[in-house]
Image (cartoon, rainbow, N blue to C red):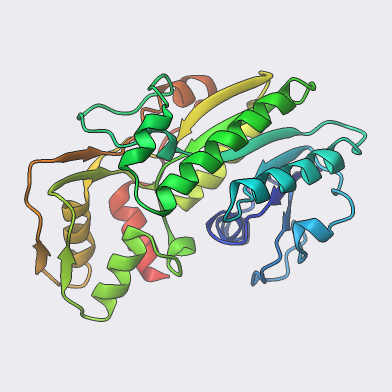
Length: 295
């Protein structure tokens, strides 16, 4: 039996894994352990264990083969302190687990060309001047954490950085993401008013694909250090997404206030991921929407 430890996955990540393992019996030799200070509802499953503790109060890491690190605070300095604590506990393990750090595509900044963002795209601190509020903080935090995980790879740990893009599924419905906010408004029969430009593109990977891809990557991970984009490469405008979701509610009135020609194309190229880990999108967007609504 292999153990996959998820640190800081109290929201989308942890819930996605729980939903997946409650509905599937595909990975019979894999056990999921989640460390979270927030309560996570879970049906009794032998293959899922929740350690309900603040990570700072966890004395030692459970024996594990894989670690998915999702911890994030509101400050760069707090992130660094948690990482040092994590590294200290990590070095106490007898066997070195493979580690994935959940970074973000926000590091690429705003993309104003209709070209998918690749891992070779330039990352520059100059880009943060165009960010607002949380994105500016998130950029600095993720950039610093990627550096720390690179340094950890120099201590003979296999490290993979996944720059996460956008997701969809039942596990995001209680959070403030575009698909969940649209579903809430449609279900409450509210008028849908979009403020963004018409050419605002995103892509959404369904949560079961998210889980399967993570597991497949862990199983095949051999390189000492690498960086990959992670998400769907199927682009859709927010306006089109709103209309797709609206069809399930027989709701046709979606209003777009900003009809400028500005292009915001936040869609990853995942060719590198597909080539090296043989992942594919199993749940198309229409089915993703239907599954999210039915929950």
